[in-house]
Length: 167
Image (cartoon, rainbow, N blue to C red; front, side):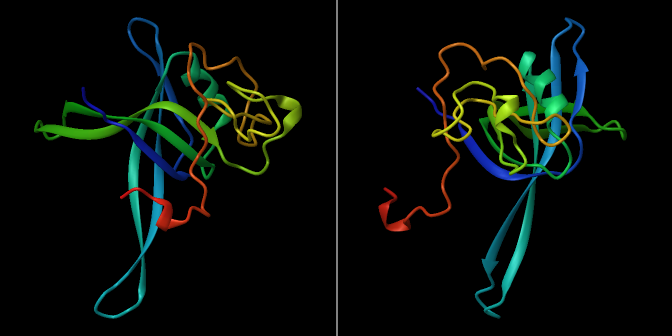
């Protein structure tokens, strides 16, 4: 058995781009910037570092995310790494690592309850399903549940006590 799971929280670097495959399956792609502050051991100064991740969403979810997400939105993405090979403009064979999203939660505070949420109940479970939505154009959009027997996930909380972690 193998496990390849990734979770990130970051901001969209541009509006999502949606297209259809030759078999008419929707795919939406966007880049997420994840900022981290690390302390330089030599100078003692805090340094801001940004990592960029390419994210792909497939099927009905792709259409909903293309409508609801916008540049700058803070999102929680849970998915798996996928290696993609392609030929660059210079003719060289290239490899990229991207995230195929299993769930996305829009963390924008502008999300409105009257528009509903994707994949779960509103209320106590904030963003309780695979996809959270809200007012279109403001970081959300109403839609159907994510489907299947997908277990709802919550983004990790910022107040986690590091002494409680098992590693």
